[in-house]
Every structure is written in structure tokens, then in C-alpha cells.
Image (cartoon, rainbow, N blue to C red):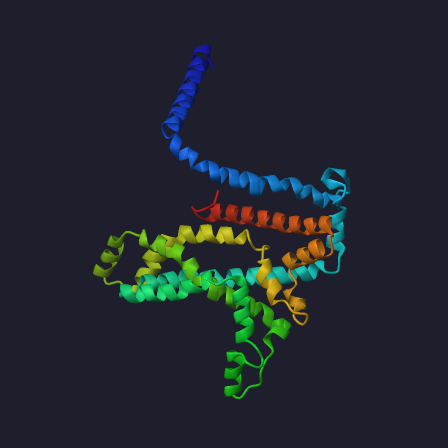
Length: 317
């Protein structure tokens, strides 16, 4: 490459950099709005990563993080060797994967059905009804579950008895914990989750439907050939994001639904971390378990995103 060419490239780079900063200064108000978000992530997301080293130390609160003994991977070896490891992993994956497979399609189906409703007034009423459970707190939701499935006063058991069956103590049956957890998740979150897909459906060009009607396509054919392809990129992105939360089953709901009789299926990684870390003051060990959970989630989201990028045109990054 000649000296003149190199000089021309430097000038072009300087010109491009000058134009970029000129655009930033021209729209500086927009960048100011980014400051609270950037500060939030720096303070509450990135700065706490400093404490991850607790997982590699024998942490003592009196000595602080840097004063505690460095033990390397000893805590991880201890966690993988414990008798609880495989049970925790099985319970966590059974709930999260089951929730992903069963509840993920429900908001999509709801959005497709709502989009086909001809009456706008009836559509709004249905949307309000199915959105409402999202605003119920987790504590109240678990209270409703205990009330509805009570062996003595629950409406579900009253129906079972009315049809000639025997009352079932649902919260004392280990096998019933996962269906109750996943079912309540669907009831509480499906309506709210359909909002994103309704927005994606609203962005589809209505002329496509008009042309399909002229060609004689029925509603099912229009849904299959127009609506579903139209929201497919959104579905892929949401699936990738949900795949990254496979190991992150909500602590609060699982802990509140947990009883001494269903603990064999309700004890998940999140509740285990709480009990070992805060109740038993094993901070290093609980940090190890939490870090293992986060690393698995990171690997899953990167893997699913890579596969999605290879087989389709949609990916998260």
C-alpha cells in the first residue's frame, strides 16, 4: 500500500470520526436520557460482579472479601459432590423446561385468537380479564392456590367430591407441585405475555389479508400463511430470551409453595441458595451455587442464539 493511499485512509477515518461526534453533539439531549439506564446497569448489574470472587474464597464477614482465604474451585467441587446436586438440577430443569415448553406457546395462541376477534368491544373485555392476573402479587397468588386446592374448603376438591371422588391434599403431594406451579404461571402470565405478539400482529400489512380474502383464503389459512410468519422473528427472540432463564426458576413462588411433604420436588437451586446462604450463613457455598446457575444460563442463551442465527434470519446478537 502506497504512502498516498495510507494518508487517504487516515483522512477518511478522521472525517468519519468527526462526523460521528458531530451527530452525537447535535443530538446530545437523546444521549442524556441514556445516562440513568447506564448508571443503573453499572451500579446494580456490573458492580455486584465484584462479589463473585466470594465463590472462590472461604468468605468470612469479619475479614471481608479480600481478607478471606482463597480456595479456588473447592466450593464448586463440594457442590458437585453433594448428594443434593442431581436432585436440585432435576427439580429446577423439570420446572423450567416444562414451563418453557408448555407455557411459551400459550401467549402466541392467545394473541392469534384475539387478533381474529371481529368485535373490538368484546376483544377489550377479554384482554382486560386475561391481563388482570399479572398484577396479582406472588404472595397473593400462592394464597389463592392454597385456598383453591385446600382439601377441606377448596373449590377444586368440592368439585372432585361432587363427581364422586375423594379429596386430594394437593400441596402435600410431591407429584402435584410441578403441575400447580406451571399451571399457575400460565394463568398469571399468558395474557400479559400476549401483548408483545399482539403488537407484532398489528404491524403486519393489512393488505396481505385483503389480498388473501380476495383469493378465497379462510381465517385458518390467513393465520398460518400471514400471521405466524409475520410474528416469527418476535417469537424467535422471545424464545432465545426465555432459554436464557432455564435455570432461573423464581425463588419466591417456589419457596412459598414449598411444604415439608412436597420438598422432594419443590427444592430448587434458588431455594437451596437461600437456605444454605442466608439461613445457614454459608455465603461462599451459596455464591458458588448461584454462579453455577448463571453460567449455565449464559451458555444456554449463547447456544440457542447461535443455532437460531444458523437456521433462521433472526437472532438476539
